[in-house]
Image 1 (tube, rainbow, N blue to C red):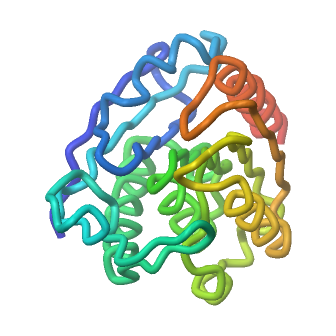
Image 2: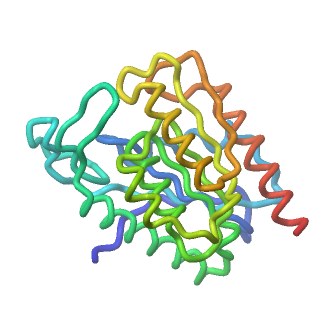
Length: 227
């Protein structure tokens, strides 16, 4: 399996936590790099951010056009996506490689967070909730769960009570709000500790949302350090 190319940034030396942040369809690893300063994370809890690049593959709904994508989307409607499940699993396995690499660099699994926007968020859900070691948490932005039954089948009970921050735009025309709410409901059914936020925006991120993510991360970091 090929290793994903990544961009890495550290907020200070000797990171204690890692956030692996996955971009959306057609974007790349640079997409969320500018977000880091806006999170306003404290220097005494240094974080390594890992931004992987999705492989370039033909995307069926875009006429087979080759672009960065975590999986192929075969069909889409207002509230449903028919997706390539094998492609999802391939991306999950690649993200799992990054988790293992962070562990080898001294970051415990419980200090590793998965974040993702849109398609990247779908992979973050699947990778985190099926992972064999307890992770730190998930940040799911403007995203959905492509196959709830598949996720429930693969869910690892070690992730029960996993903190999950979910944010969605009320006017999202790409991934409608209801798809995000449905994913939230699945996460709650699996026993995750969910923080749901809605914002008056479309398929994007906003500064208020980024600040809320920063606050949420700081809270999780402090709780982990106090265990």
